Amino acid sequence: MSAAAPALKTASAPAVMTGARLLVSSLERMGVEVVFGYPGGAIMPIYDALTGSSLKHILVRHEQAAAFAADAYARLSGKVGVCMATSGPGATNLITGIANAMMDSAPMVCITGNVPQGVMGTDAFQEIDILGVTLPIVKHSILVRDATEIPAAIEQAFHIAASGRPGPVLVDLPKDVQFAETVAPFGFNIPNETTEADPDAIAEAERFIRAAQRPLIYIGGGVKIGRATEALRAFAETTGIPVVATLNALGTVPTDAPGFLGMLGMHGARAANEAVQASDLLIVMGARFDDRATGKLAEFAPHARVVHFDVDASEIGKLRETHVAVGGEIRPAIEALTARMATAPLAIDPWVIRCASAAERHAARYDAPGEGVYAPALLKQLSEMAGDRFVAACDVGQHQMWAAQHCRFARPEAHITSGGLGAMGFGLPAGLGAQMADPEAVVVTIAGDGGFMMNVQELATLRRYGVPLKIVLLDNSSLGLVRQWQELFFEENYSEIDLSDNPDFVKVAEAFGVEAFRIDRRDQVEAGLARLLAAEGACLAHVVIDPKENVWPLVPPGKSNAEMMEGA
Image (cartoon, rainbow, N blue to C red; front, side, top):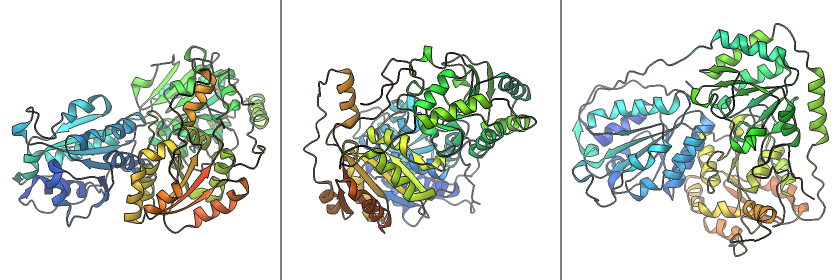
């Protein structure tokens, strides 16, 4: 099982209760502590049943934020995140967050109310076929037709969400089912799906690795999801093979670890992309050859054979020919391979030296001219000042790429980002969910002015619950990543990216009851970051940066990763 399996609590003697109360009891039995949601007519019985329960309900100010927060809660805690909303617009407002969890394989159970079964299909008030709408973006959907089915439906939903390749599961409860009274036995027969590593595949992987002269470990988010971080680190240390990571795998190997070359792909490190292109063997662990990582797929790692580890068999061989396929749970497979590799060292010193030299030669510089704030330097300093408890909850845009390139991550849970979907507005509610998952962590939402405005209302949620989230708002008065592409690939036709009429973000935050201040010069950065991190409650640092600053390096769309562009 990839995500943490919920620990079932002992159920009391069966008693007559409503379906709504049975739903709440089922969540309690699954060990749920926090639920993110927003009430409405079709889910009102469940909200009535929440009163007096052990569940801590977080009232967000938009249902999209509930899904994003539950997603981030799951990623940091390793538990299944839970969100809920009413029918119609409440349910449809969850859709972006559900898709985000599906694309990044975050375990989540989404509970929606629906109109009574007697009026389903009649275009009743706030009726929507949410099962049909979400069918392509969930692992599984359950429409509960009878209150007695609720306990089994919830146990099944949590099992499916957390097992194998995790993802979101939708549970839809018509209002009449919520009102119905019943006595329901608890108990869902959860199958044992643990798979052992195939010894023949492991032996073949070892043979390929020992035959390689330029092997490279290519890790994706599946390593973290499969709870294989320590196993992967032991494998890298045992073999000495250099490592590159996807966006969602950052922190799996500490940023400053020997042999780590950085992120690969469109905005990856030049040393990482050069190593991929020169390698003769890719040891792919929990990655899916995403287009943002590979660039032009036909020219990606042209000299390399592939050993692919993945719990999702459909990913193996989907985009790239695989020479050795290692399916099933990734942690035992890595451990088995490490044990075999420990018997004799690899003779790859020239390759290791070559990669280390490239990493040193292409290391980022932070001595940008001028007195303005240089975002990469600020983010690097922020992560270093925050230490090993640092968690970045990133929105989407230039700031997201700068954080990936320049922040120091000591663990994979320290980097929470919308990778596959790239959903603007993710950062603030994700920070909320992450901070709820680990109150002792130093959680910092890193956002741009565009994405921040998409869920700015969640400042009220921070204030209400005393969530001490820190926010670094990088303001370039534009949709920066779109502007950069328009500059480079659309002949500087800057169409609809101007955000120069942004509000005063300090005043906005203060209106919500959140401490805020402004940084607009480089000499203010250190003191400003110290103030941000020392704040007792939620705090926002409004950081003004150069609107013309671009993210470098960059692989142009449709080009090979060997064709990286650098700034002037």
